Structure formats: structure tokens, C-alpha cells
Length: 297
Image (cartoon, rainbow, N blue to C red; front, side, top):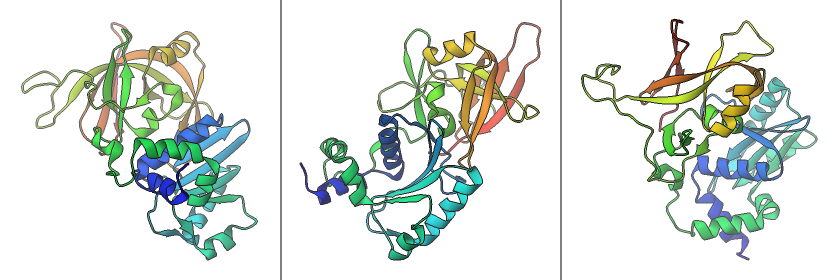
């Protein structure tokens, strides 16, 4: 077994997003459902962790030397009450200030520092250290096309790299996987100059994906949402059982309960900042286009 400083160095070598993903994997191994939030505007919440009737908001701080102060805990505590969650946890590779620890006493907010992570997951961190030797570049996932790339599997079993919002790609109900293979081809096809559907001056791609149409359960008057599904295995239950509930994370860390009301195939055209979804209906029916914001690389 490696010494604690070496184990901590393996965690600190991760990018902030890779650290967040590693923490999410540990919660999933414990039987929790984990939904990451958007990278910005998340009110201090990185992960929404649910298990049975408990909802936990998690904030991840991958620090090499900095300490987590009381203001960070106060912000997350406010998000906890806003989301009506059960409790919150701040997870860091660094340490907490004395003021932060004193403020957290008696409140429904946990403080997990680097020592606590080593205590909880020593073998998992040692395995990580073998994969990423101490002193290696911390760029990790960033070198593989960026943090907003996922794997889409077509009905014939072929796997494609596709860029999507983290709220879509990281949602386990939608069947996407995070992209780890840098050689995986991008979902075709790229449109050349003069071809139909290419906006002037924009490098765009048109692809065909599965699409479910979701309606908010608690707010049925809200506009419906068009959401892609990454695998046939995730798609089929929704296809045959309308009314299936899907939890979608909001940017403030809360979860929105939605219901599948229909399904379609779509053409998706996207550039570096927007995902444009055009739903294709039955012959003779009308179609609509919506634009969903995407995260930059």
C-alpha cells in the first residue's frame, strides 16, 4: 500500500472535472444514483446523489494546496435548503480552515478532506495511482477531445463520439458513456461548403439520434423538452412504455421529474456553443426546432 502523501498526490493530479467524476463513481459503487450538474451556474453543487428517500448535494474541490473556507460551506448550505435536500457534503483533496470546521458543527453538511478520502477509499486511490503515476501530467481527460464528449451507440452496435451537454451525457437514464477512447470516430457527418443545412461560416455537423419527448410532471404547462438517448437498451423501455419517469438535473442542483410522452428520431446540427434539435414527425405533420446551450471545451 502506498503512503498517504502518494495516494493524495494521485487525486491531486486529476483535473477538477476528472476528480468530480471519480467521486461520482465512488457514490455509484455504493448503490446511489448520481446526476452531475452544469459546470457553471450550479450554485456550488457538482453532484446530486440520491438513494431511496435521501438526497445529498455534493461539491468537489480538487485543490493542491488551498484550504476550503467557511464561505464555500455557507453557499452550499444555502443550496441545500433551496433544493430541500437531506444533507450536503464538501469533498476536497486539500484541507478545511478551522473556521469552516467550527461553522459546520451541528449542521447537515459534511466535510471530507484528503485524509478522509484516503480512509474511505484507499484501494481505489491506489488503483488510480497505478493508472496515473505521480508526476504525470494532470490533463488526463482533457487530452481526449474535452470534457463534454460522450459515446453514442447506434442500433447496429457501432460506437461514436458525440459532444453533448453534461446534463444530458452524465444522466445515467439516458444511456451515454463518457468518452475515454481518443480514437473513436465522431458521429457523421460533417457538412462541407455549399451543402444543405450548413449555416454560413459555422463548422456544423448533422447526425441522426434517438429522441424522447419529455413533459414536466409537476408543471405540465411547461414547454416539452427534446432529449437524445445514447443506447438502444435505454431507449427501448421508453419506446414501449410511455409515461416512464426521467429525472433531469437543474443548474441549481434540484431534480425535475419528467415523463416520456412521445419519441421520435431527430437530426441534430451543432456548432461549438449550441445544440440545435429538429424533431421529425410523421409524414405530413409539422416539425419544430429548439436550441439547447452546450458547454465549451
